[in-house]
Amino acid sequence: MTIIIILVLGILMLSSAILALQLKDLVAAIISAGVISLLASVLFLILAAPDVAMTEAAIGSGLTTVVFLFTINRIRKLKGDDDG
Image (tube, rainbow, N blue to C red; front, side, top):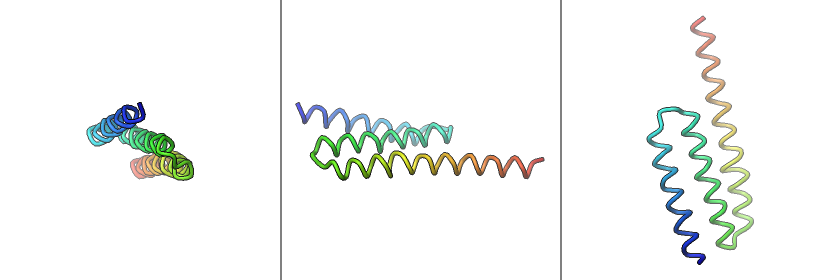
């Protein structure tokens, strides 16, 4: 049963990675990359590595996604200031 869950998580991670590469919208691509990291943290939890899972969830999924979204928002605001 564990093997099936690991395979499903792996397929979902690959699907999210392909989706992140194919999306034209940067915000959607960043969220898709965050989903990859969140699925990786679930995988680490299943593989009995809770410390790595917590770190991946906090840093990989949470902080990195927020920093990327903040940066995209900041760049869009700066571009708007230059146009006006």
